[in-house]
Image (cartoon, one colour):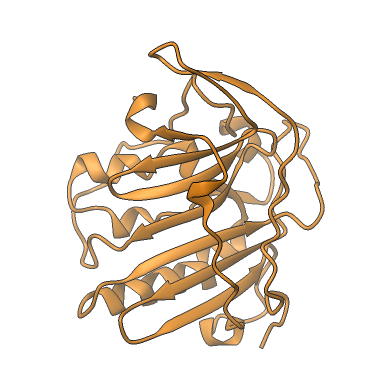
Length: 221
């Protein structure tokens, strides 16, 4: 079992300031913005160009609409990663909210393809063990409501030439009315394909709603 996520510490690195001007003329001076939607919440760092915390309920545990032709899209409102950050390197465009958990309809599915929901994730992790954990949470959602919380760790700041910061690890907490399961994955090639090898003690909850300026996802579209 990996113990990298055993400390009850939320490793959020929040640095710098940006002035964010919304389409209605409102300005927000903050690096870190809490993005809210009826279907999810994402705490996003413009300085790191990566999400910090992502929360969602699994909407569609069974296979739904096709994602054919869908690609990641950005926004002029926030500074995010873009296609250049994922070119010619070992990092995938890692969905935080899985497309397969939101494919009830095209509108819901498209929300998962925002760069706000995208993290630099090692390709071997994204395509194996992390994917298996996403499948596991959907299996649970077949019979009970499943809430997921992801915390993206940046223990050190390492940037790509294109500027986006590379996460050092991913913590995922899966909660139902019956259980609370927590996992931690270093952002590297997995040494095991068994998700249970990555179980870790659950971290203390933090209330992100009280600490950061809030904007609504619909503002970006």
